[in-house]
Image 1: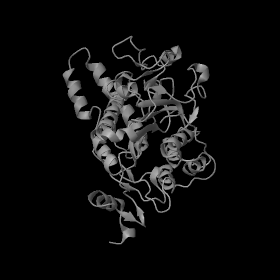
Image 2: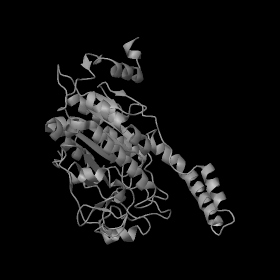
Image 3: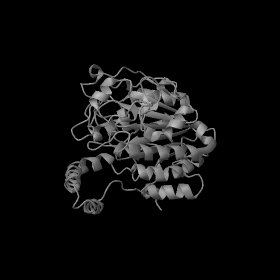
Image 4: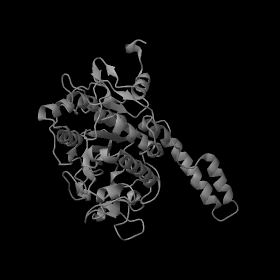
Length: 406
């Protein structure tokens, strides 16, 4: 077989089945040790609602802005926010998964995080994050920041980071001169109520006082879903959903602890314009499944978890105020998650501010106080010992912001 004609799936099959594989004299699969750093980027496509993940329960404005979807203050209800401090709490959907990691000091959150991009476009902002090239000047769509990280962490005559994307196709973040394989996780569960199920439920309520309300409710849901389906599907960019991630997290971990230093996976389904819910409901279900996957990943990594960092981020946050459909719309600032055995967690990191109507960006969104390239640059500097010049190679024009996350 001509090696230039070899597609990435063929490459992966060879890499997983046999030996360390060489491409252009560069070892793709270096032999990792338990002490070698592992890094996994989890990209939540669709713009998740950070204000119902990291709950600003100390702000009365939060409850004014979200009369239907706010999560109760810690201790005040069965599904109340999990206590962090006097201002913040964590979504109760993560009670048994991510919250224990936080309590053990193995998870931190960076609020008011994101990009300088204000387009509020899924595609524009996702691309900018994956490329990591900044907002100024033209973009090179053939060079993603994880590929550049793999490049700078290797030197002449040494093995660079072995990299694998757990996606159907190679994403922008891994495009570049370094050889990177990809493996599909196309085992996607489908959430929600199907049309057949809706008819069965409506039939159960026939000839009862609730019959009209049930039928009308399903009709409204179907109408809104049809209107939003195109955008939401496109925003996902063929990413697996949270059920798919929860089911596959252990397989990802097994590959990362044995063969892979640098990984990427995207998880779709976060574009919650309609019926988002609060402590329970659509968003809570997705956070629960995501949390299950992250906890399973941590457990499966075993001792290697001590040298592993997982970053969870999304293209943007969502509007602080709920909309007329009890959902939230495209926003700006978000919250990044940082998890791992060596993470200096159990805290919020980065610049913060109080939450009020006057502190919102453009009177609608969280502001970005912790630019993601600076945050990631500072994290990579600590993980891999990168100097300022190397950080600027990964994120051109950026200066690393050391939040002492590891």
